[in-house]
Image (tube, rainbow, N blue to C red; front, side, top):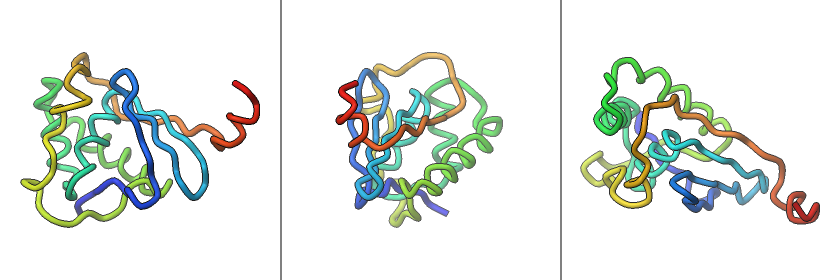
Length: 129
């Protein structure tokens, strides 16, 4: 299965090398760590299979892609459960090369990809925080 960012319901920005995503329907917002942000950028174009994403992560961080494959799959499944990714189309050659833009400065040691779900953006704005 190929994964692709659900750009119909997700709006995002990269801030200091990490993605911040807002779900348009639920107003929930999410913060992704550097590894999760790398994955997010990789799936912004055409769909990529989890194995390809793992290979790109392995090359980027110098980690054996086989050891991180399960973490990538679990991360993508979690994003799919939140409605932030969907089944992708096309081929990997059509996808942007992760690390070519916002992630270029996000080199460091490998951490498992993760995101944190925050409340509704409207509540944050109204609270004045």
